[in-house]
Amino acid sequence: MNLNGQDWDTVVLRKKAQSSAALKDNGAINAARRSGAEVETTKKFNAGSNRPGTTTTSGKSAIKLDEETEDFHHDRVSSELKIQLVQARTAKKLTQAQLAQAINEKPNVINEYESGRAIPNPQILSKLSRVLGVILKK
Image (cartoon, rainbow, N blue to C red; front, top):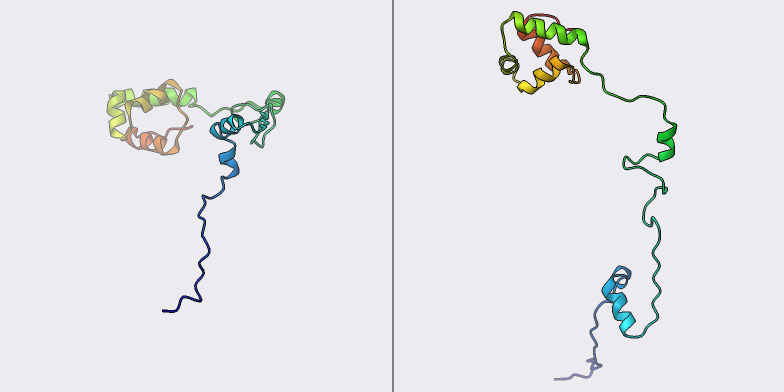
């Protein structure tokens, strides 16, 4: 057996060097302080974000919101539609719960439409028109 071509140098296995994120955690900083190394830490204001300092929770700039003059809101059920819906339901002698069951919706939906809190949905309006036998206008 001839071992002349073998490499007999010592092999040293080491752990992979720590990443920069691992060097920044509190444990690594405290270990460096204990060993006597000089450590400089700086807390950066609003670091890691691509937004200016004056933003609201909606993500819009507070200045832009203050300058905004438009009134944004959803359309609600008109008073004519409310009255028309109540009259058609009472003419058919249906309760809100019975009407809701007939159109396969929750009674809460009918209540919201009749009180004017609902946002008009064309699908629900067509179901109501079909069951009540009247044409409901937005």
